[in-house]
Image (cartoon, rainbow, N blue to C red; front, side, top):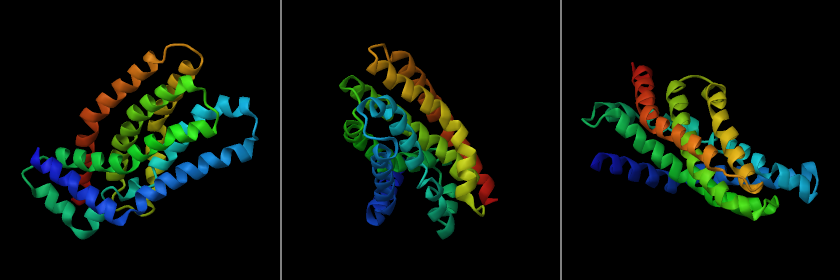
Length: 221
């Protein structure tokens, strides 16, 4: 547990010291959402109808921007090999790095989402469900993205490969996240959609760190 927290603190310090990834992710999220009213028009009914989809799709794309660097810096400076050789299971180390990634990218997206929902005229009934969907969905994006980042580690044009690998796996998060928000806005229960997202999150928490660890070992051989 101590090693887990050490890795989280280390990655958070590095992320806060550099700051570029978090700023880039949030800036992309905000600017892309702000552009939609200019592209599809200012009609309130139209913006309200597409608000859930716009927010979830944009958050999904924004979360991918820094994924290719999740393990890259450690790989380039050799510290990844040291992490593999430590007594702590590599899956635990990977889970810590993914948590740090979510805290610096997914959490800011979740905080920014309600503000942007106001811009898109989302009904107030959807705000709580939007936060719940983001709270469940963004960790899934980081966990699945960690597998992709490990698989393309050291590859040329890794960012392109990463997108091709993980975008299809992100589709369930998009479907059930948008479905939950739309259900809440329409006065129906969002619970089924959120329960499915919760199940996906539990499965990702159990499987993704170890799958990423196996891919990292393969990349280092």
